[in-house]
Amino acid sequence: MESFWPTKEHWSLQIPLESDHYRMPQLAELGYVVLDDLPFEVPTSEFEPLEYMDWKSGGDTNFAPLASADGELDCRGFWDKGKTDKDALWTSNAEATPTLRNYVDGVGANFGRVRVIKLAPQSRDEAIRSIHRDDNNRFNPDGEGWVVRTWLELTDNPDSYMLLMDNGPDGLPDPETEARVPLHKGSRFVVDTQRLWHVVVHPGDAARYAMITSFESGPTLERWIDGNVLATV
Ligand SMILES: [Fe+2]
Picture: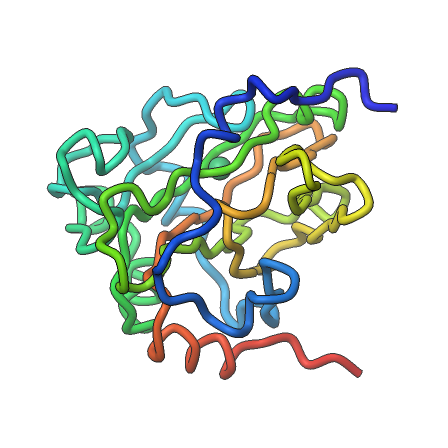
């Protein structure tokens, strides 16, 4: 048994699961899809020296915003500015990381917040306390694309993993559905973080870095996923 488990009072249960937004078939069954590893290097000099802000989400975290609602270095939700998590503007940080900026631009889909997250080590017991679902689609007009997230691991953490769980009938995470996406360098995946409970288990002894991007579901993102999906043998 885990030492902590969310209850029905957890704020994530207030976040809608059902809506009329367009959803991609690639995520229909599991809520996530693993892509092949990034086929090129992101130099450490492009993510470690960025301007990080103290912002706690999913553990002891700091975030460097690369794109935000208005281009300011701001970690708050887009909804604080009355905006859906789409149509983001690059921040001053983006100038220092052309590789990541070009990567996001290269997807071609409408993107919202783009951030590099820095996470201090946390055991599974510690991580479970922060398991949650995201409110990615607040203010997203009905019929438009459901906002999902992509992850790109920038540091090499082969013993760390993204813990994902789908919802049980009570709306709480269902342990039977646990999935672990490995977080070695270059690992990347697309996940519906509004549907799946998630948190990173990171037992290492140094901070890990990853880029997280919000993207709008639609044909462009689907083509990008199909062109990068992990080939299973
Ligand atoms: Fe989250």
